[in-house]
Image 1 (cartoon, rainbow, N blue to C red):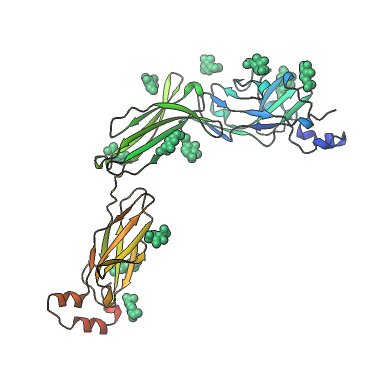
Image 2: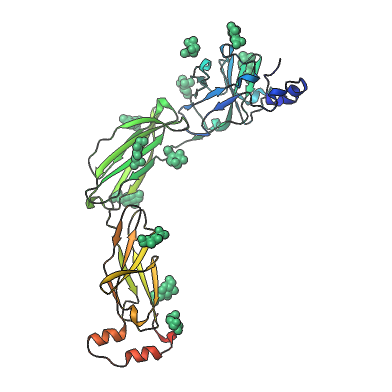
Length: 360
Ligand SMILES: *[C@@H]1O[C@H](CO)[C@@H](O)[C@H](O)[C@H]1NC(C)=O
Ligand SMILES: *[C@@H]1O[C@H](CO)[C@@H](O)[C@H](O)[C@H]1NC(C)=O
Ligand SMILES: *[C@@H]1O[C@H](CO)[C@@H](O)[C@H](O)[C@H]1NC(C)=O
Ligand SMILES: *[C@@H]1O[C@H](CO)[C@@H](O)[C@H](O)[C@H]1NC(C)=O
Ligand SMILES: *[C@@H]1O[C@H](CO)[C@@H](O)[C@H](O)[C@H]1NC(C)=O
Ligand SMILES: *[C@@H]1O[C@H](CO)[C@@H](O)[C@H](O)[C@H]1NC(C)=O
Ligand SMILES: *[C@@H]1O[C@H](CO)[C@@H](O)[C@H](O)[C@H]1NC(C)=O
Ligand SMILES: *[C@@H]1O[C@H](CO)[C@@H](O)[C@H](O)[C@H]1NC(C)=O
Ligand SMILES: *[C@@H]1O[C@H](CO)[C@@H](O)[C@H](O)[C@H]1NC(C)=O
Ligand SMILES: *[C@@H]1O[C@H](CO)[C@@H](O)[C@H](O)[C@H]1NC(C)=O
Ligand SMILES: *[C@@H]1O[C@H](CO)[C@@H](O)[C@H](O)[C@H]1NC(C)=O
């Protein structure tokens, strides 16, 4: 019964009448899609496999070889695509299957990685008479000369007396050469590094810091540096971010700022230095002593009517907080003049003049 061959030979299988197995994956592997690796270092490929039972002559106690092939899952006897064969002492890639194959663990380490190791790699089992490669799962090994910059994530808001936390994480593709993370902070803190496993079984090193925000940190930089030991030297990558302290300096401005006449246009613009940027601006007019929402959006354009005169402010809102600007006055020419008791004919003139003549 030959229910145990490469997919290449499915036609053969079909002819031999083993219909139950037609089109099935004979080997199902689990491995990350992609691994970013440093040249000169090693790469550990987390790998597990399973063999659908009803369709195989697989006997885990008699596995002879774990094999990695590159470029294509279809071996077809092409020895030039074999990069690693656990049964051989010399291989194209120097490596070792560190997982226990009897436990269906095919975790593999390749040492002394060079740029030529950049490839799509497939896993294959040879356990006579069972030979199979999983055609649907592969790992893309990408070899780089310099490490990727670590990731920084932030939680909490830079607001006086509020705790703010930063996580820095850097990939650790080679367990023996895990990066060491250090911080440059505007405050004293001694974080610790910890190795963690990601959802795709790849590893990274994580460092967490928490401190109480202060306005003194405004525009100070925070930097996380990852140092990878490679051979006798180090390879370094870092990620910096500039701390922007709340308040967001929300302010409202008018253009034109001078008193305007009825029928002309005025732009009210709300600005904020918040980080991350504010996405929701809302405008209020104080009327009858109470704020009334009149518009939303960073810029509010008014074609002035007599009732538009008065005080305005804007509200800048993000996920964490709301901040209001100072109130700004929208003055209408005639209205201003009447306050000073020097009414000329401005209002009447304004109403009669064509809009094009008004300042914009
Ligand atoms: C697997 O192989 C071992 C050793 O050859 C043998 O003793 C055992 O019976 C086999 N198991 C199955 C399920 O065929
Ligand atoms: C792996 O090595 C074994 C032992 O030398 C050999 O029988 C087998 O054909 C090799 N497999 C591949 C895919 O090269
Ligand atoms: C692998 O697992 C088998 C079965 O549990 C065990 O007998 C063997 O010693 C293990 N091999 C290694 C290298 O740990
Ligand atoms: C990696 O290569 C160096 C020389 O380039 C050699 O000394 C070392 O043994 C190799 N390491 C492994 C694990 O093969
Ligand atoms: C940073 O995060 C992105 C998205 O989550 C991820 O794709 C990337 O691999 C991470 N980089 C490092 C160095 O951890
Ligand atoms: C940092 O990582 C820890 C552990 O994974 C997590 O609980 C926490 O929410 C993370 N914090 C930030 C700021 O990403
Ligand atoms: C903070 O970092 C930016 C760019 O990352 C740099 O231009 C600036 O000079 C740094 N500021 C300080 C105080 O180090
Ligand atoms: C590499 O970095 C470590 C700290 O992570 C340091 O102790 C060591 O001196 C550095 N080695 C070289 C050759 O720079
Ligand atoms: C303002 O509105 C009036 C009446 O709707 C219109 O005649 C005038 O052209 C508008 N002015 C501007 C500058 O759009
Ligand atoms: C912005 O805030 C205003 C006032 O709370 C709300 O009515 C509006 O739906 C918000 N818009 C968006 C896009 O979140
Ligand atoms: C108001 O904003 C619009 C669009 O941004 C612009 O075209 C117009 O010139 C501005 N008017 C004034 C008076 O600033």
